[in-house]
Amino acid sequence: MGVGDMRNVLDRVYGIAQWAAGACILLICAIVTVQVGLNITARIGGPELSYTLPSYADFAGYFLAAASFFALAPTLRAGGHIRVNLLVQSLSEKPRWITELFCLLFGTVLVGYATFYAGALLHESWHYGDTSTGIIAIPLWIPQSAMVLGLLILTVALIDTLIETLIAKKPVLPDNGSE
Image 1 (tube, rainbow, N blue to C red):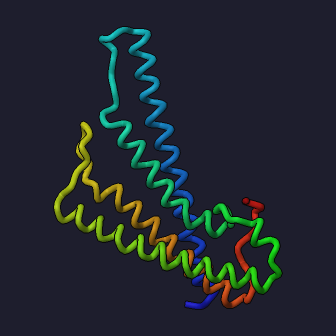
Image 2: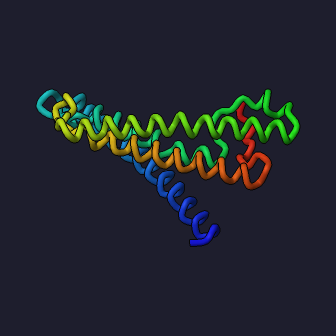
């Protein structure tokens, strides 16, 4: 597998994560829309038409967490994470490159650490059969899997970006003017 092939694979993984985040947001919209529709029906039709989606708030929360974690890597690659550009923009290219390398290295270590312990939490939830406390008992390993997968993809994206930055010998993340 060549460098170009690896680039295509990684970009495809980031794209899939982005689409997964978007799908989770759409699922939240669907859940909330159905519940609002049920609430309106109950208001118009009276208490005998009062229905609730069981654990709808739990599901919406799980999808929100999944969307957040799945969106981390594509957002990094697009340069969309909030950075303190006031300081970075005032630096010349070489100090800016060194600063970016440091931040990418520190981020890789920090996110790698978080990924490892989130994976340990996932394993523990699986092992002990932990479930949510809502009306519908959801095995906690299911929503935790999205968190671990999102963190793992972010760790790969940080390593990918770190290597790209080292090879280019200049900052490679787009500057979107975030402050």
